[in-house]
Image (cartoon, rainbow, N blue to C red):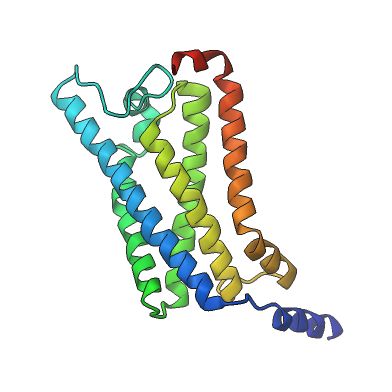
Length: 211
């Protein structure tokens, strides 16, 4: 009984300051990040269509042997589910944009929506992390448009999770909720740094090809 009272007290003490500001930040992140992700995904699809029409076409995102989307598009990893991966982005990112715009209007969205968005963002974060490992360690090339999708997907997942924790949509101990909410920016920064360091190490002897 005493333990339950203590947990209840901890939950009561944890309140994210300026909740409205938090939803505004998330709204802008979803709207802008979703829009960027939509454009990057659409460009990948357009480039794939142009390559199919003209096998000699050089995609606009292919600059050199290291920074090229051609090798990624031609790989089996580029069509993991039997269709081009960017199709997922074109379908999913507009939903993210819509959620961001609605959040910016101040409208209240139901818990199930935020949890669904969080689940989708988690799936996206896992997928782009897997794609990172494939392009870096197996394909041996970095797709610029793909990396743009990585850059927007990761913070969307982290900040959506933080918002759901702060609102109680996701149940967790007060200390964990507070740690995640207060460290969202740090989590994203560390995540990016890890990816950047791993890329630098893996392509260390090939960076001369970039210039």
